[in-house]
Image (tube, rainbow, N blue to C red; front, side, top):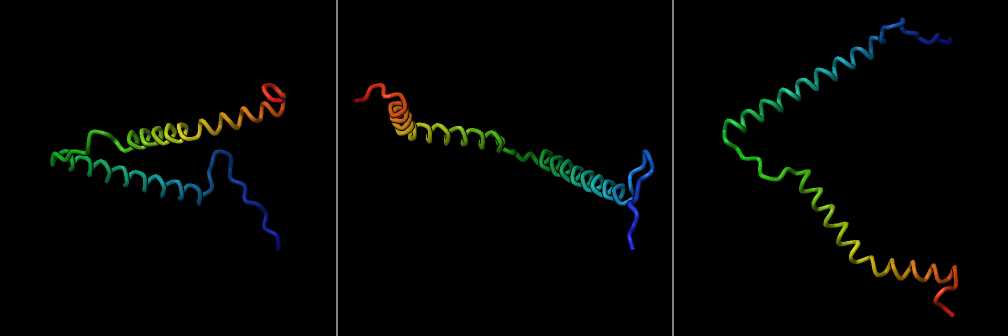
Length: 94
């Protein structure tokens, strides 16, 4: 027995999709409310959350890693590039 595909009416979403969207919306509203209440409690208690947010620290640490790796790898990459160009063009060699 074959089932015919369910076609939603124009302008109407299927009920399951509507229920899922409503559930997700309720979850987001609940989480946002809890987050706001927590922040209000921390502010009222005078809790200091620090001077530097976490994303700034992650960005600075990533930049430091990139500089450190580039510093260590630059001589090897330069010699690799130079030898490859010399092999292809024959410039600077015998």
